[in-house]
Structures are given as C-alpha cells and as structure tokens.
Image 1 (spheres, one colour):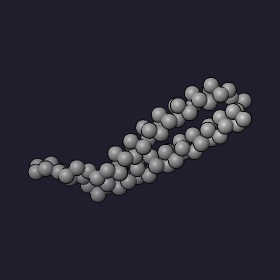
Image 2 (image 1 turned 60 degrees about the vertical axis):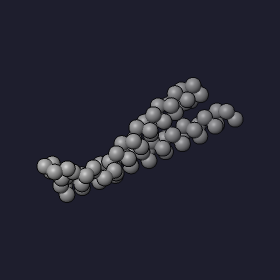
Image 3 (image 1 turned 180 degrees about the vertical axis):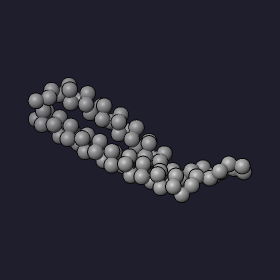
Image 4 (image 1 turned 90 degrees about the vertical axis):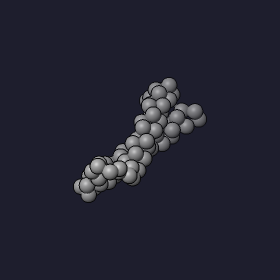
Length: 80
C-alpha cells in the first residue's frame, strides 16, 4: 500500500505532466500563423500530421487525468 506522502508526490508529478500536455495540445490545435510573402505554407500532409499528433496528445492527456483521479481516490481512502 502506498503512503499518503508518496501519493501526494505522484499527484504533483501528474499535475505537472497534465499542464505540459494541455499546453502541447493547445499548441498543436492552434492554426498556423499567417504566412508572409516569400514563405511557403504548410502542406496538407503537414496539417494531417498535426491532427494526428493532436489526437495522440489528447489521448495522453485523458490517460493522465484518469491517473490523477485514481490517485485522488486513493488519497481520499487514506484520509477516512
């Protein structure tokens, strides 16, 4: 059985990872900036790759949030 201290440490680590994953997902979903003259635009394939990366990042974020909830549930059990 994990101690409350270990669970709190895991919770903090998960929260940091969730924050990082949310920022990454937001960046991937953001529209590319408008291109100025002389610069090439992103291709259709690049857009599809970004969509795939965003889907993977969303899946990772869901897994992290699920893990966070599991840790919070264990902490609640310890405090009762």
